[in-house]
Image (cartoon, rainbow, N blue to C red):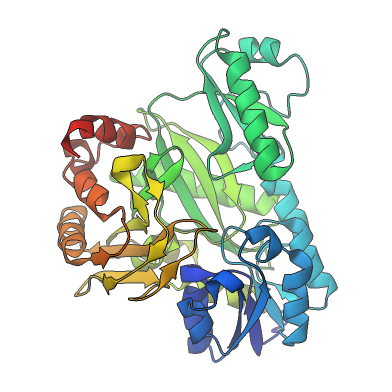
Length: 457
């Protein structure tokens, strides 16, 4: 295939907040003009100020702004953008949006719509994984439309009920026995219908006390695929990640090679292009099982950038412009440091992580060597109530995990936010947990830490 480079002059970012600002910064370094979109509630967000152009696309609610495909595409056409970067969340994994961008004569900075469809529906992705010998958890091998209980019994309890179009932990419920199965099914289907407009589900055997391990990959339009060192995302609450790190303190070089090879096989089978992430569950014996594919940039991409030394947003844009990957697998696997990301949310952890929108009266972010802050907020900024509560990502890096943990403690101690509650105090608690400090994490550790600290709030 002949290499055809289509240099962008202007890119519209179909997102908001810290990820929009993150993309704008790379565009500036690439001498590409940026267009920010914003809702009426985001008029004073930093991403609006930093973009070369900005256009309001509707009221605060996401359904009337950031999820409005017609409005976003119209804004891109109006500002004569060459391409659209979807960021993460919102429309980033929506094949209909990707196709609408293409039909409007622009480039979608992400995988082709058919690849999004193939990998975005989890039951289809699972079938594809099986076809290329990527290990999967025993399950229904497809959508379960009838005989739900009989299918569950055949797999064997405990099982996890999953929405076929789910994401972010929504539409997922465990069932530990036949007695609690129907309630879990009804809850999962109801949640999925409300969140995605689709209540179809499939089942998987529930792996007890697993680790959540994921592999970042990049693929160009010429069949080249590379996979980066894994991220450990086991520190999560209700399937929402709080701390991510790379490399995992649990994964050996031999297992890492197998993980990356499996992720690459899946990407090639789907004829994937762009960046993406293959997520796995790993048991206590380091057996890993395919879980899902995120066909977009992830919140935690900075830890991979620091560990590998590559700008993943730049890589996305270059691939979309038609460039070949210039990085081989050997270089992609080099581990330059240990990196840890703390998601700082405007939430009150003492009240079951209740969101805390409102005005930030003082904002003093951490700094110094080995510290990166990705954020769109500032002193005087008012956090809207319409969106995710993430207000900053604190990312630290050091030569090894022990030093990175020390740096995390130092940085969290410096980070001051007044006017709203944040999760900074809870991150300090997690860092002082012995299991986390020694790398003995699983996806249930955060809940156990919460129970241990219930009487200490």
